Each structure stands twice: as structure tokens, then as C-alpha cells.
Length: 265
Ligand code: ADP
Ligand code: MG
Image (cartoon, rainbow, N blue to C red; front, side, top):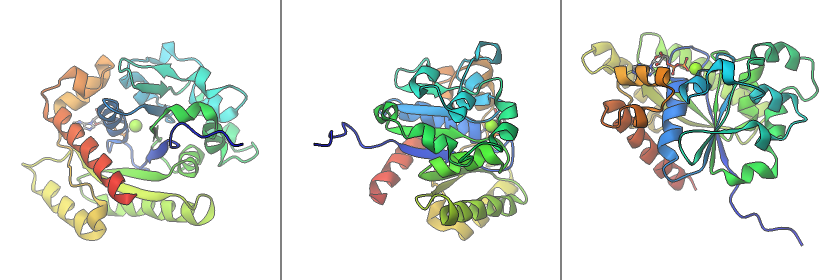
């Protein structure tokens, strides 16, 4: 008799965009923290910069084996993850070695599937959501995230040429879906650092919505200085400044994210 799984398998979402500074890490941390009020969330820091780890209170000098050790294999994932200040939020930090991972991975077997393989273990059944914070490139680390993921959330900064940038990641998603991971879908495009006083923000947002329609989240993340301060305190925005517009925005995003999931089922 087959054992009955206690939970649905976790839903895996990659936060990806080959551009740096568009709000991948900020969105991964703060959406994860907002969801962790009701769901058990694992955040995987796959960026050698380790910003998601620092932003959740694990500075570089306190990092040991982490996501790279998971990619390399041979260590149980449960032993590599760490608790955070939030009960239901767990992190797999970026280890200091992650910078060399791209090169070393290139020479391994099943090199695009290392993360997917690492996550395909019973340990992971305790999570409802797994988020992967990707580096700002479309190299082997991001490819591993896209092969492991069910969907991709693409943060997009409202600036000139935003649409051109986003077509590169959507083409990559299509290509991975055709060749390596047929499950992969575009979860949605998230407009970030939106500045209502700036006409360009409005214009870019209108353009992106005209092109991607319902794939664009209705929730828009405003430019909010508190969001940029929170990581230096090692805190998600909701703990750093619960009354800030940034907190309200990521709360609203969490509600929309869950509502869309329900509709998709
Ligand atoms: P990425 O992970 O795509 O490189 P980050 O999330 O690290 O982008 O964001 C880039 C920088 O912008 C960081 O310094 C971050 O604190 C800041 N930032 C992100 N989102 C906002 C926002 N909505 N308002 C103000 N600053 C933001
Ligand atoms: Mg980042």
C-alpha cells in the first residue's frame, strides 16, 4: 500500500529577471513573509550575492553550507535550512561558495536538474510554498530554478525599456517549458518601485498591461524608502515598519497571489 501524503506537494515559484535591481529579492522576502502568516514557506537564496539571506538576518560571515551544498548533493536539505524570526518562514541561505557554483555545476551530471532533484525529497512536504530568489542572469543557477519551479514571478521595474527586458525572460521561460520542464508557467508580472508622481511609471505600467493583460498582478509595489532600509536591519518590511506603504503592498500582493492560485485550480 502506498503511503498517503499528508499534504499537497509544495508549490515552487522562482523570482527571476536577468536584470539586477528590479525587486526580485525584496519581493521574494516580503511576499514570503506575508504568506508565512498562514502558510509554511521555504525561501531558497540562489543568488551568490546572498541578499535574501542578509535581508532575513543571516549575514555572510554566519553562513555555512547552504543552497550550493544542496545543488552539489550528498547533504540532506533539512540539515541545510535555517529558521527565521518568523515561525512559518524557513530559509536555505546562499553559502559563501555559491559564486563558484556556476562554473563547478557546468561540469556535473544533470546539471540543469540539480535543484529539482534536491527538492524532490519527503523533507519538502512540510512546506506549502517554496520560493527561489534567482541571481540577475540567465545562467545555470537560474536555469536550475526554472527547471525546479512550477511557475515564475517576474518583478519588473517601471522604467524605460522595461518591456524589452521582460521579453528576454519570458522567451527563456517558454524555451525551458518546451525543453526541460513542461510544468513551468508564468505566475505573473509584478510592477515594482512604482512612482505615482512620475509619468513614466504610469506609461510603462499601461504598456506592460496592454501587452501581458491579466498576467500582470493588479497589485503594484510603490517606491518606498522603508523597503530599501529593512534589509540592513535583517527584517522583512512587516516587522521593520508594519505601517509603511511597503507592508500594505506586500500584504495585498499575498492576498492576490493566493486568490489567483485558487482560481487556477
Ligand atoms: P534584485 O533582487 O532584482 O536585484 P532588489 O530587490 O535587491 O532587486 O532591489 C534593488 C534595490 O532596490 C535594493 O536596494 C532594494 O532595497 C531597493 N528596492 C526594492 N524594491 C523597492 C521599493 N519598492 N521601493 C524602494 N526601494 C526598493
Ligand atoms: Mg536580488
